[in-house]
Image 1: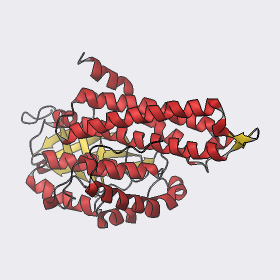
Image 2: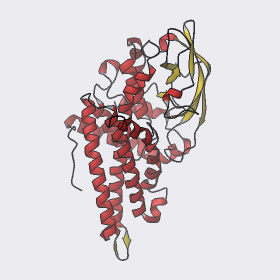
Image 3: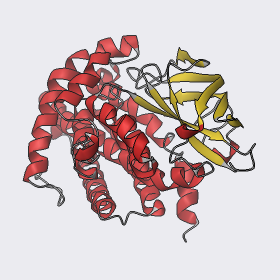
Image 4: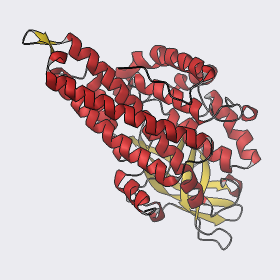
Length: 381
């Protein structure tokens, strides 16, 4: 394949990519199987990432971050995906939670938490999904009831990434029980508060190294100052404004997985012999890979355009939904074709394609299901 350079890349980002690649090869790649078995990364990894400056890259330096923008986060996420890792939940930590704090938090909340997220001292999670509520955020049943100067949180969450290690959880809850707190709010909950419980780490078919777990809030009390931004009832617009970045992140990771699988499969088919010649020499193989290469290039140019628009502050919800839907559908198709070209070995766990194939399937579900993405797009037509 001809080399392609993303138009938003520059020398600084290329240097960051080199740093991220070395870190991922040295600190992530060797531990993949062990993390799959224990269902979480080593806690020390967070501090190592913070020490080399790979956490919260798009958070201003005044809050301990890297002072960059979304491009910096995308570079690191892509390098993580290229080594086949999805156990280290930096997307949720650095791209999601850090930006809820940065964009909506009070100055006190920013100063209290962002430097600790950037250093890896604190691991962050966001708790949206509930056992009976998936993509429909308006169906949230977790409640935060005002009692004097405290909110009392009661409810349960599931499918929460980073849950078993999180020190800080941004909890989505209804706060409509008081006259001064209508609607939905995001509340900052420290994991050492009484009534906060972690449930079991969930057994998933893919992304097994990621600590996805249940969380329970048994009348957890937090001061009213723990409402994100200090003003209750702002949760739904806060969520809606951040979701495009989350969906672009799903596309960025899926794209990197697609490009990596394609490169691995090209290499494999040129080495693997069948009927006296490399598999690559069969027309079917070449045509399949030609289609996959085209799919990857189209996805790359689309996602690059979305990244550039996002950095300019111009990425709208419908375009982000298009990127998430289109890229995750294509990555599933390309990975399936790549696995097929590996033959029986593609189904063996020692081959990276096997893990990538099952790990990426969930990308059509989380971040808002692809059916929801189509609905978002359709509303603009």
